[in-house]
Length: 140
Image (cartoon, rainbow, N blue to C red; front, side):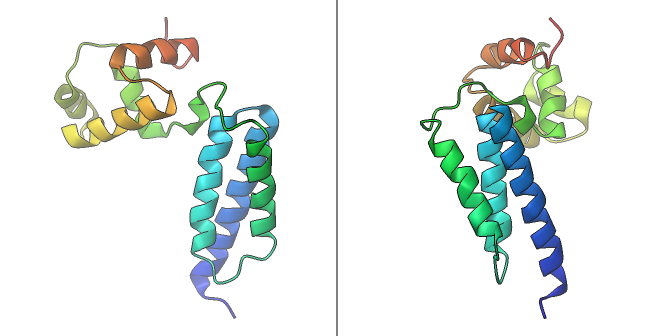
């Protein structure tokens, strides 16, 4: 009999793999890759993987056929916290001021900004704002 936490990990892995497959079908390769990595983490915590490893393998194969290139940055990969930070990037607030506004530390904001840059394939605040507008995550 498996440990009690095993069932939640199995369900989490199943849902995450299903999301990865859905994003792959939609052509949102960044979100599919993000969910694939999340699913790998869930599988690592399981005593037995059953058919889940095979399903995840199909996702990886589908992503491999895309040539390893992310065609379009994925807004779906942004967390709620990252979205809140992104909404404040067009302002001239410093990271510390954004942290105060969101009731969190400057370091937490800095971590979220780095994640936003990575997920939207940007290197500057200006690029992130432009990409956010292009993806209709921010008002023009």
